[in-house]
Length: 498
Image 1 (cartoon, rainbow, N blue to C red):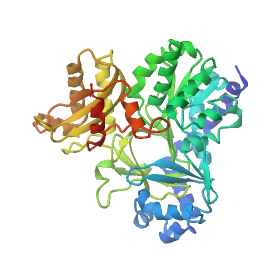
Image 2: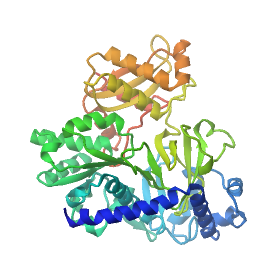
Image 3: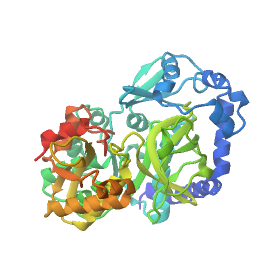
Image 4: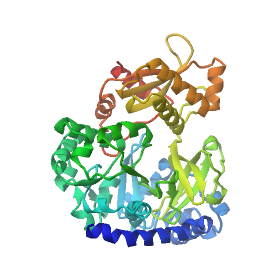
């Protein structure tokens, strides 16, 4: 046992004890965060514009501060970018996390001196929860890798600007620096394929014990290692113990990733966002991710089916129910107020409050009133794969077809298989039946002959990689939308259909 793994166990016990203190008092904890945020920002431009001095309760807040998206806050953010102080939060932010938007183009999300410790320590605490529960800490003594975007940043008006993963890279604790891979020179490479090739060169022969990243890009890294060595990952990295991921649901990728590894390894899911570190998996035994209620973020939850109403309900933590799809709204210690991050979650536990990420509020299919969401298509896929164990999945996305050349409208599934089903028609049928079970509206439309059952389009090898490359979004934190309400992605993917 090395010094890092030895010292991790008492630290893990301390972190879990502190965690339980706030997790067992969720409403009180959120009320303290709320009061801190309002009091701290009273004298900012935003606080004055929205009468923070007159806010005493959540009800007051809802009356004075509407739900915002990026465009709504953009005028304030532009003032901060120009160098003005005390706009959204006292002083200036330390960083802007640059993210790719759609309607908004590039977005600049502030990260303050108060919020950055939560971004960094939450990732640490996720690992320490694993150490505490499992008793395993050996992975801390080996080499650790996070497949991420470039850590390079530039400075404008006293504020550093870069990708969140790059900003986080600058705050890796010194005691882990000697373990961290890849090298700085490799990490700043912009060409993702060349970068992964170089990471393969650097990591072969090393004692890799923890590997972290978005599952499809980790799969790409593993595939290159297998092609280079002809071996399973377990034989290349025999001490590989822990896979850490976030950003997408792991289930569609699990079977292929573990087949490539050659054995099961433990995994820890995290839910980091540029707006704040929202949740992490605190247990290997319990479902869901622990919502971080004392991390400088006040949460509101809007029932997803009411999100687009004129005045939808905005619920505090004590008002949510299990199994309901909620849009996440955040007010943060970096100066985001009533900010809708676009994600949807469902609570799977209230003691403590644990969530699963169910999709994106604007990523759904409701071309016919069915409102199919990400967790439903992923659940249907998980079931179909379980019924056809020979199947290995690379990636998939779903879109509606409103005006087919013949027959009724339908949902089209674009799937890249590493190993296709022996009976595609049976796989298609199982997928459709399970989606009917998971979504009653979809079931009604199928039963009522408004829609016909879904159709699968099998795609060429590396289709999704080629598509992402064509869009300039290969690698890093970029993800393929799981489903769309239009045909833009689907029409592009048709080019790769077999």
